[in-house]
Length: 121
Image (cartoon, rainbow, N blue to C red; front, side, top):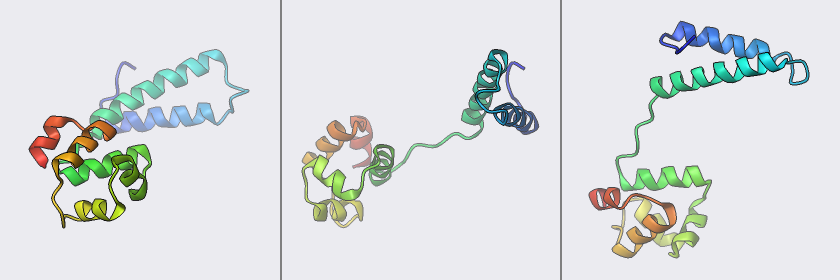
């Protein structure tokens, strides 16, 4: 199979992966392991095409996504950005506008694209 085009094919591939993996890592041959890898890559390509994740469209959304990716709590983020937790809370809740210093910190510490920050600040 070169690529998965339909949900039914995807389900077949996933069932085959499950059945091979159910054997356990000690009972899988090298050929079966190679087949698992190939099927997993096909499934991954299908999932990435079928289930596209749209990027955040707001500054707060982008910050929240980066917090999730980096597994940060709000207090941790405030420490990283060198601002108080109270100020970060005000910004995140839309009660205070982000200033240039905050945006610079978000850009450098969270690796958020500068063009995105300029367009959404």
